[in-house]
Image (cartoon, rainbow, N blue to C red):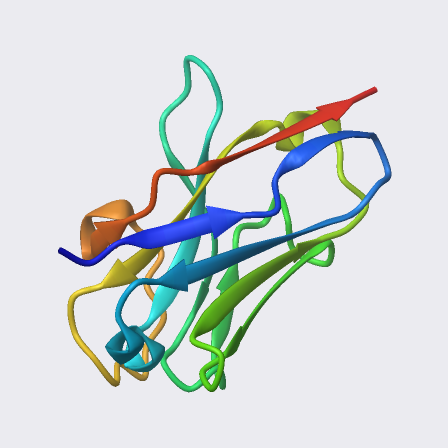
Length: 127
């Protein structure tokens, strides 16, 4: 069974930065479009950022545009989410996800388009 393992979460003050990492258990996922989502307590899971298989196309939620950057290093089989200028409203459990089709040139922004999910890493931003 394929697993996605997130890391890099933590507790920090407003204005700080974090870099999340996602490493799939299978190397074949270096060819899959990937995404980051987040879910705060009492709220629905929401889209944060997405990247196509080659890293040439990305998409961001309006709430994080200009502050967050998604990237991937397929040689290392790792997807990153660099988060800068963090705000208390960014506090959530952050999930890495992969779609079910390899070599997708598109980016995907809704949870139902993703087949594989990690367990999440907690990000808490204090004011």
